[in-house]
Image (cartoon, rainbow, N blue to C red; front, side):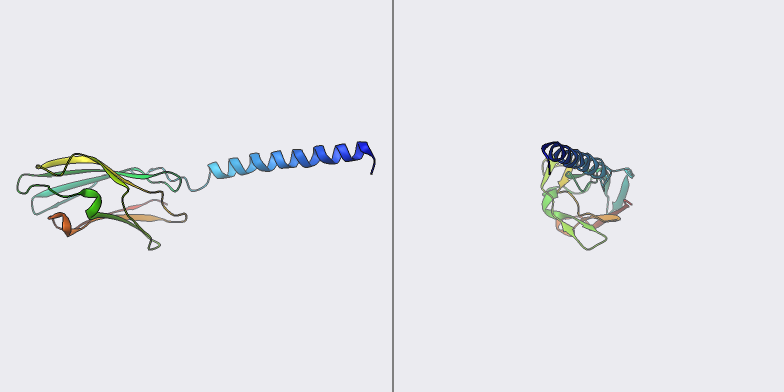
Amino acid sequence: MNKGALTIAIICIAFLLVLGVIGYAVYSSFQLEKKSENSETKSSDINSVIVDAVPKVISTKENTIFYLVFNTHSVALEFDVAKVTTLKDNLGNTYTPIKWDGSPAEGHHRSGDLIFPPLKEGISSVKLIISEDAGISQREFEWDIS
């Protein structure tokens, strides 16, 4: 192979590699980046404790975040939201919160963001579960994300 043909072959290979990288970047940006398009507020009013839950971010690439509001005039809301809440998806995966970024465990009115790790690929729904360990009746909130 002469020097000119080798140079052309190297340029063609480099061009194909650049196209591959660009193609992958475009493909990745359209992958399951499930920002919460369904940010419907779900509410539960049981035993004089109202809980509202709103998905702020539902994602496979960044942390999933729910905004929660607890209101009551009958019991003190003295529980660690991150310890009594889990997230489950339709494929059976369970996610533990990374952190509660909200009001402290006291009083009758609490609100804040409950932050979970990114979700697994290929899911179509999630269920947020607040257990009875919170001192309130168990709550379940479900969203379709497909």
